[in-house]
Length: 228
Length: 367
Image (tube, rainbow over all chains, first blue to last red; front, side, top):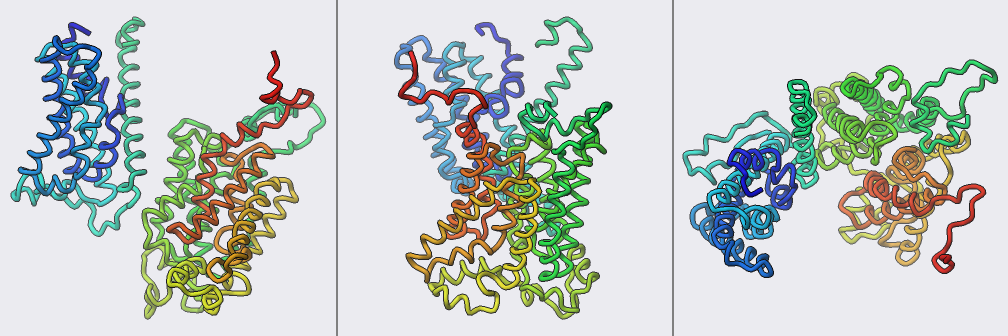
């Protein structure tokens, strides 16, 4: 763990140890807010920012925090970072802030963040903690956006609707109507739809993984390679 | 025969084929195909009664749903690399499609059936491992999906016998289902009406008494006009299934009994705001559900005592959701909720193995 490379950090964050698909952490915002792409992107980026800031801070003070009190310290750090982000979003993306509502302060309770602080940042130097926060956060954002896209297309028949909430007035034209006169598929927008869609994404990842493992086994028949 | 007797899941074993060479050449008592065929025969009288009251649309819905269900089953079997023709011969897909179609309003657009059946066969049945492994009743999962997703299409019920008037010839019904066009001079708002359960719920919420509500022409002797007779014909088919030992008595008796008892308790206290037990038993899908849906051998409880608990749970939930829930009928929700409880019920109601001592109670736990 001590000499993990940046390549491994990235691979873990985006694929092998993805917070949304493998660790299944932070499911509450993942499922509640992934109704549209823009909502998902907004919350994903806010979570990424929090992860980076909290990882760096935790790594910075790792030599001075006694293990007995590390969890309260982590929670305080994360809570202050989230409060700052909440105020910033209220100022710069006010409409998006109103839509995401309670889920921005709730980033504090996202287990993925305290999980990375405890498992990674408290044992690693600052640059690696920063890279890990970025990789994990963006990996989480990718899953959130994929889920949002899936649910938005199936549920509404649109993609990137309300893009102006995030990218300003010029982005109003971004929104696409994929299916005209679509009646909507309510199930995809309701909470059960989020669970089903996440299940399908995890299944897709597992299919890809087993396909990769088979190809690796064919190319290099040593058992050590195949297991990896 | 001993193989069938010892195996835990008769369905799974019946899917395998064993060549019989020596005598006696007896047909096995249990085969999935034969059981499902009998369920289909038993569904015929009720389905014909429904077609009598609600027109050709019922038959079109059933045929469409059955064709789609068999199609999806074949596709999924191909995708899972399982034998297609022998598995289709168990008729389970036909039963699923048929039961699903009976829950639909008579002029339901074709794509609603497509989505519901697709979800039922692909997600609720084959993603869980196919027949014998699905924890939830596929037909009811499909129905709940379309009920939640397309509320507007799913409340387009028609008063009984409107559709048997000459304006709704078979061609007109086909046009309505497949193209979404009604015959000239007819509009959706003019022909659709609430089901008796739906009407009861709305009128009760406007503080009218049951006796006032019952004046409405939609109501018959003790339930909805037409609906009570459909219920009777399904009851006939269900009793035949009982007689042929395709289903056991515990689930239907416990379900209808607990529904009647629960409804009776509230009705005795206040007959003006709570409908009578007879109304509840003969309304909506209660009888169809008790004999054909709740008795699904895969997703229901399998122990004799467990079946009583399972059926009673469905009856109580059915009454609770009908009376205080958001939807007028609740057979699908009640069945799915109890499907979830079935493994736990089975765990606590295991019958004693023959020749074995009863399990020690907590007091005489032994040394």
